Structure formats: C-alpha cells, structure tokens
Amino acid sequence: MQLNPYLNFNGQCEAAFKFYEQVLGGKIEYTTTHGKSPMAEHVPAEWHDKVLHAHFRVGEQSIMGADAPPGRYEQPKGFSVTINVDTPSEAERIFHSLAEGGTIQMLIQETFWALRFGMLVDRFGIPWMVNCAKEN
Image 1: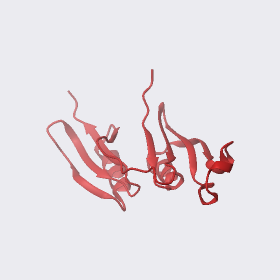
Image 2: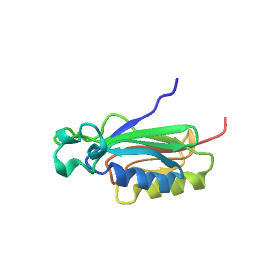
Image 3: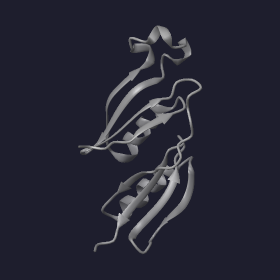
Image 4: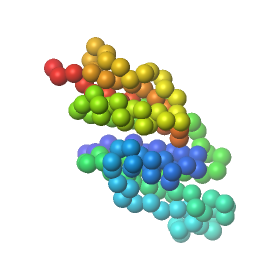
C-alpha cells in the first residue's frame, strides 16, 4: 500500500507542479488537461487548459493534483505535506524555496525533536512542514 497526497488548486496546478519539480528535484510524470479529456465539451472553454490530473514523483514518493472545477475550490486546511530530509542545509534550502511568496507559520529552527523544523503555506496555498530529525 502507498498513501499519496492529492492536492487541489485554484487554477495553478501546472505552475505549482513545475515549481515543486524545481525545488524538490523530482519529475512530473503525467499531466492532462480538461480540454484533452473526453469530458472537454462539458467544461467551459476557459477551463480547457486547466489541469485535470497531474502526477509528480520524488524518488519513491508521489504527489498528485488537479485544478478544482470552477466554484469547487476550497483552501486547504487540516493537513500539511511533510518533507523529511537528512541534513539541516537541505531543510533550510527547501523551506526557504517553498516559503518564497508564501506565508511562514513557524520559522525553520532547531526543536527538541529536530535539527531543523519549519512550517509554511506556499504561494499556491499548500501547507508544508519541513523536518530534519535529530538522530535517536
């Protein structure tokens, strides 16, 4: 079994996944738009270039996402996508990259459980936690 987050965006899925590809070093493996789907005739023309489904992979992990249909988008709440890395410098790099244009909720810093931990909401409205754990 594999659990993967599925993120909904307000028309910015393509830009978000390209940003995540750059920051996290992964690869977008699949993207299709509403206009390229069999349901294209049922979607407003201005929505044809919006993402119906995207799949992004980093190593063995995946994030999937889409642009929520018009009028159906809700701001994410009640969860965070968590990134665990091995070094404080990698945690700092990822945190500051994701935070660019977003909102920092907790500055990245040392905590009782981590060499570095920080929380943010990126410019696309997705909540993240970046963690570099202390060795046990």
